[in-house]
Image (cartoon, rainbow, N blue to C red; front, side, top):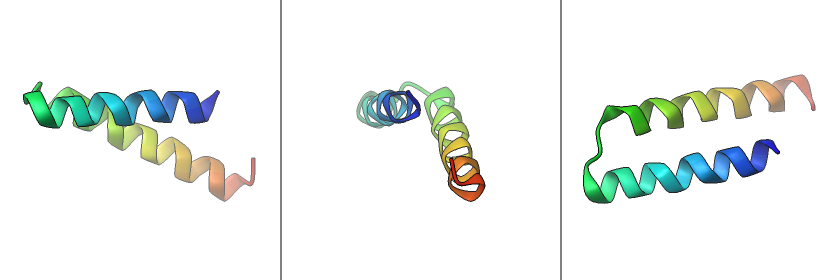
Length: 44
């Protein structure tokens, strides 16, 4: 489930870079990376 969410957010981020959607996509990417790092540290 987490990998699916990360994949969708990364795809949205790339689309945001191509079409200059705004800073919301970049904020979502940062949140996704923080969640990913937290799960790696916790070992889940």
